[in-house]
Length: 283
Image (cartoon, rainbow, N blue to C red; front, side, top):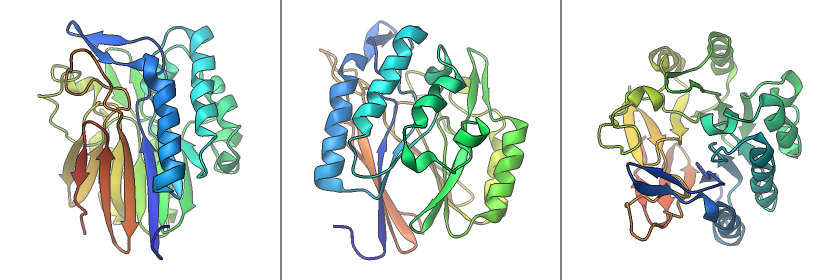
């Protein structure tokens, strides 16, 4: 049981269900184990961690064409429907390579907690909600393949309004990083940070800082653990469920999922599995 006044979040990121994928001649994504590992995540959430809600940070599929991606995306959501806690999705760039906004929203519509948040009703992939002591603002960062990542101006304007209206501390959730994160040691993005970081991130961070309400920002996508701090605010990246994080041979997944624990005005974020990381709370 959670302590009185505490709030716990389970986090799963970059499931990439589908075929294995290699980088620089090495198998790095173990997507053929994604379904079994997602079930293990659900079992751990329900049996041990017992979160108040679960965040799914996107890149659910390793794209292989719309005909395969839709049932695979649906399969992961069906597994996550076994959670005792409500599940809130984020869109990753892989989710929209072969699928369409309408495909994702149709599957999202099966989540009772998503009704009334604006995404389904207004046919958009960003939304906000209040849960426990926190307000959550979920953004949709888009990627133009092999070019850049951005958040559209209309969404930035919406974000500014949501921050102004938010009550209590805010957690911003997005797939790509809004930080000036150093990717030089990242095997996926060391030579292409423009495919890891949101291009107009400085503008978004300005709104975050001016609001005085944001406690932290959370993302996936980079397939590693990282904390970059701007203006006293932690921007956290968490590891992928299926990443071969150590370049292990034979290849094996990190089995990474995370738990976020809010208590009073402080928090801790812990990444579990074979690439563990503990981010000490900022206060």
